[in-house]
Image 1 (cartoon, rainbow, N blue to C red):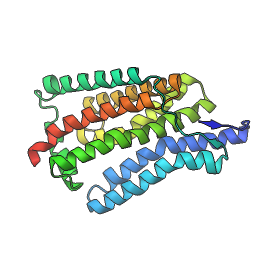
Image 2: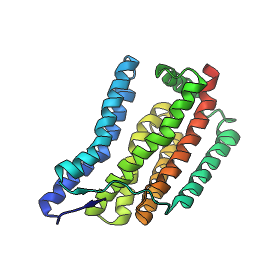
Image 3: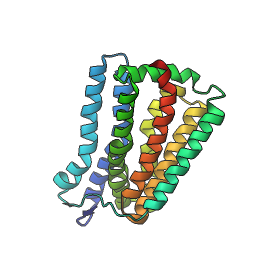
Image 4: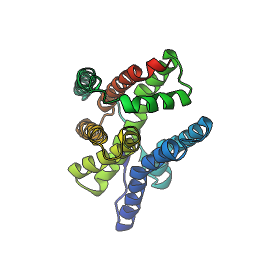
Length: 245
């Protein structure tokens, strides 16, 4: 990732402050645009989201290159871990689709959340299968890559400067989970079983992808796995929202 200068107590404290910011900012951003601005005009929500994402994804490079003055080495994309990442992604998708179709959907688990999800999608201007497909592709391919760059290449790797590998994996994965909790709690209730279950699933995904990145030092495997999982989520989402079109 970088060529780091010798760490001093002061620089380690500064590093810790940056990591705390990186861990907490995505959750704050999600709360602002998803909860605080929920009743505001869609344009205001999208503006807050866009500005926040620029800050979030710009921070790692700004921190490493401009503030820490370290040699910037952007993420590597080697084939190491690609097969494992793909198999894990397919396994998660398969389990999710089977669980949704055979258990959750017949039980009506998503009935209470479906209307809220449909309203959110409509407010974003997604009112056709074509637009939904475009949104799905963006999140599955582009946004998943940006999240892997942020959570694995930056947050997880910088945590390794301060702590052990297991702790770095655990902390980065909980941070990755946290901003999803805001969304899941909105749809399924704060401490409901579903919110906790889905949140735990996100954390487990973070653990797998951080471990894979630690093992290969390549983002390609985690990115492929993450992209496949996101694609599966959007496929389930399509089943939920298409009745509103």
